[in-house]
Amino acid sequence: QVQLVESGGGLVQAGESLRLACAASGSLFTLDALGWYRQGPGNPRELVATITTGGSTNYADSVKGRFTISRDNAKNTMYLQMNSLKPEDTAVYYCRARSLATMRITWGQGTQVTVSS
Image (cartoon, rainbow, N blue to C red; front, side, top):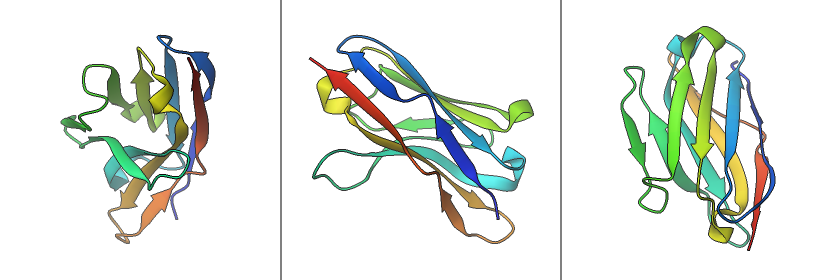
């Protein structure tokens, strides 16, 4: 079963940037439904951004123009570049993927992002 490991979270001030990484244990070409999700305090988990095998992207309205999702197939890694961070972006960020072989969805363990005002 594929494993996903996030990194790059931390504490920043409003207006600053962070880049999250999600390293997969296998080739990204064996996965689909790649995406980043987040769960803030007291809130349900929500979609942040997705990216297809062909590189097409989709974003939540709340992050459009500030966040960029990307993938490096050679490194089996997906990224989330987050610019102009706001306090309301504070959440645990998770990456997600689905195995094309088993159709099973896998989540990473999450990485905390805290934005102070």
